[in-house]
Length: 89
Image 1 (cartoon, rainbow, N blue to C red):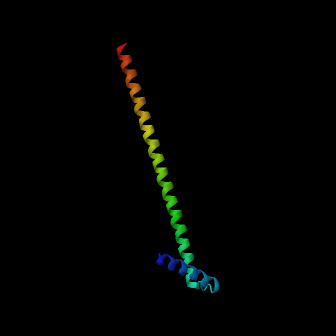
Image 2: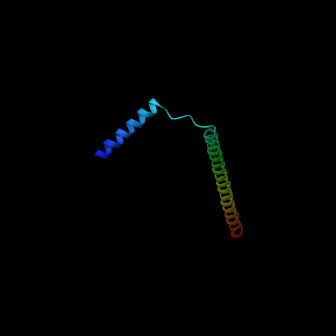
Image 3: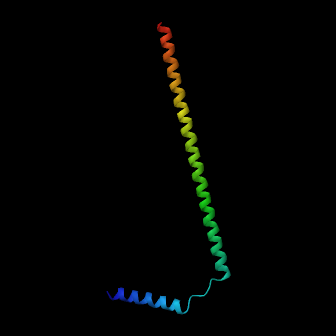
């Protein structure tokens, strides 16, 4: 319980210290690094979206090809069945 009180008191003192004397502003190097990090994150997010779109398009194309193949197999079965009726007559 004493640890909890100590942590709460420490957090309150840290807040008060930051309020009275805020931390120094970031250096130019820190700002540059943050900008690079942000650009990298946006670039990676765009790349990930592009990859997901490509995969989705590939799945749609594959599904369409499979449907077309199944339709063709169905038409082939119908032609074979029709040929069988013609021979029986």
